[in-house]
Image 1: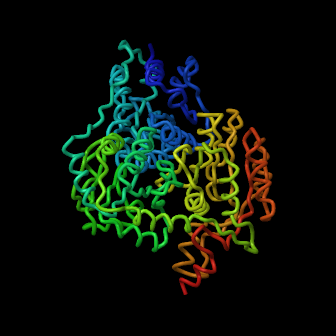
Image 2: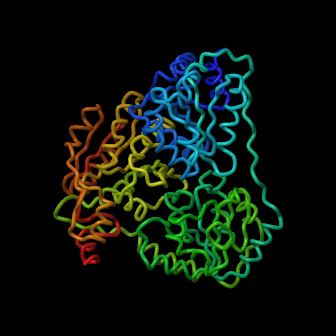
Length: 551
């Protein structure tokens, strides 16, 4: 068969049901091979970043590798943002990149790029397949590498002439992925430290997002009465209504929250690389020498002990480790109810929504609060990068029944493509996205993809005419010196309607509840255009307050 057909059959063998792409002449043969597949839906996107973000969203939602294809040069450059997000977020994504023909390599040909150099610092592996006979090895290796250890992106580069070569080898079956087991001695060591602690705290991360991880985390916390703080954009790993919920470790957390958690006498970091956001800019745990004993459980040795001195590092599957620990006798050093109760009292007060009535637009928090009341209990929640998402993280009591999708890497433009992908993955599960006017004009054109695919995402757009996150920093450091953060926007109501989407507009606070209910009741793709306040710039700050802090 042709190499292109071999690739498609390999994708099918690995269970791929969707390939996101922007077509290019560098992989025409692959597009032709996809024409004959009745198992893979080729989703044609409007920009390579949109295709990449859709693949990242699918991989986050399913835990399995997802795939997108881009053409050489500009196409690969546009798609590189998704490669970076997949690496930062530890998500298994396969990127197929068309390349110039083999005879042109090394001659600075039209759109030629050395992808080993281009993607080498972001991807787990980059392979350029010059010999079609190697596809039987490279394709299963790509899926295996993307999934094993810490998941991440793998790039497979396909010279355009190679795709038409004949391949004699059979398509290889998927390679099993080994998972590090839990040593009895490690579990016992954790148990001993836990038994000595009066105020333990667990920081739960990305690698607990599976159903097994969520179940094991809940069982462990309940068995040993350990409060759980969730890392950035991973609130769905633990029930935010649980008495042991210790909050979301994201941006903008108040000092009181960090100070309260710092009273812990044992920290267990599980399923997180414990980067700057999860550790509150390396203040909790404190780098390089934590105040508390630190246990770090992760399936890869690289992050363990890299920034923080770690008393006990365990290279193991986080979910499996917690499942084992949950079955051990309850490890209580005295009553932990007071510790958990102190945290709960803070959290209950902190997440309670207190609406404001700004004069310059709608408090977007009112919209998020209304969505949280009207949305189905199992809604998929998608956040873009920006201040508007702070209301979701602070006030929406997310549970493991929800699916929370957001770019930990902080990439703008994630939400709309991710919402389209989530809606296609499970049409019966409502996909609700919040996005700002900045991100909307980066990838909002993927509304066209939603309409073409019959997808029905609900997109709530905060339109306040500024790059809000940057304005926040600007007003804190250079109050009243606005530079580069004002936006000139189209009429988003007309813009969204031109795609054929159902559109609801909110321009005053009395409209919020009815408009949200109407939007969520509509079956098809819906955009809610919110004329939101600049003054109420986030769930944590106002412009006037920031200027007062900066003066």
